[in-house]
Amino acid sequence: MPGVAHLAQLEAYLNHRLLGQPEAVAEFSSAIVRAECGPARPGRTRAFLLLLGPTGTGKTEMVHLTARFLYGAAAAQRLERFDMGEYQHPDSVVRLLGSPAQPPLLGRAIDRLNAAGGGILLLDEIEKAFPDLLTALLSFDSARSTMFDGTTRDLTRLVVVLTSNLGAAEAARMENSGYSAICRKLRHAAEERFRKEGVARFTSVNCMNVLTYPVQEQITRNLVAAELELQSQHLRRVISAESEVVTFLVGKGFSPDLGARHIRNCVERHVGNALRAFALAGADDPPARATRAPLADRWSDALLLTVEADELVARPAERSAALRGVLTRQVPAPAAEPRTRQPFADRAASRFSQPQTSDAPRTSPVCPA
View 1 (cartoon, helix red, strand yellow):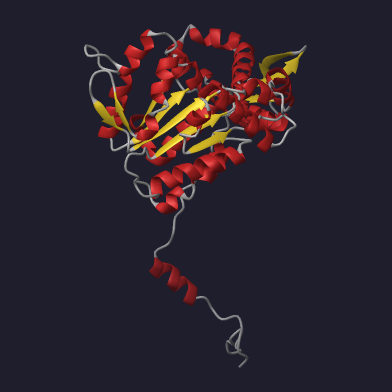
View 2: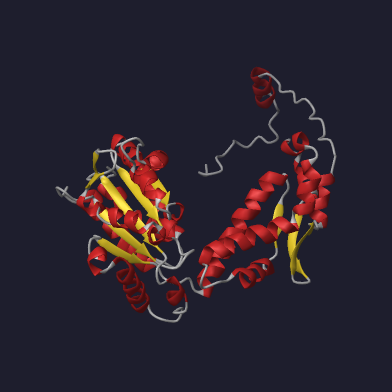
């Protein structure tokens, strides 16, 4: 288990990486800290959490970041995720919960987490699951589940997180409303679908806020920086962008309904299209592209992204005269002349053998005679 001092940094860690969600981060991190530091409760999971909010607001990302914070390099082995959109049909019950002749996918995931010492079980977009499956999953708060293969599995060492987009369309239209009003709308939608007694099973119900325009603008800025870094490494070129590129991409990608996911797709599409010709030119000779070029060559191939005629384009970057001079200068360094020194004895003899220029006694420059 992480140390107490380490757990105290979870909220700051999440806030640094999830923009525009201070209330949801505070509630979620508090629930995780209680689960990690609190006493074990017989017959209960460590935490049974429900995350509500519009798509693209960071529900799944917050769970992944929490696993990375808690488990570090072992996060991939301590987090099991199921996309419930893949389990919407009647045969999903057998696939996920098993049968006498078929081991359950969910059961095997729980076994792996228990073997690792516990972890996080994430059930994404739970409202899309087949109704019979949904009923079984909402009973996970009891920390014991007997699946159709006849095995009873223990969940007392697991944090079980369910996410849902219920009420997202209505919440997206409440951009100017307060966080409390959005939470009431999302919780009401969840209670209509899962019933009040179903929602009451969760130890904590957390709501994600709608991403406002300023928040999505900052997200765009971060995504553009990450995409340019990725493309620079891929194309072996220095790639930069003018400030107006972010404004252009925010205008294209801003969506209260789709959040950061739509912005990410917009950034990747427009930047990729702008660099398409350069990517095709380098695709014919992968070994040459993989060889790191000298500094002067890489600067001579530098690209600058600009906005022209309502589209993103890449142009060769202009270099200043001073930079051109530095990169093109081929002046050999002057050869250093060998320096000769007299032996110490000779230098001392020559120093003390010089005749006195005056008969006056020598005086100290500090203390007068």
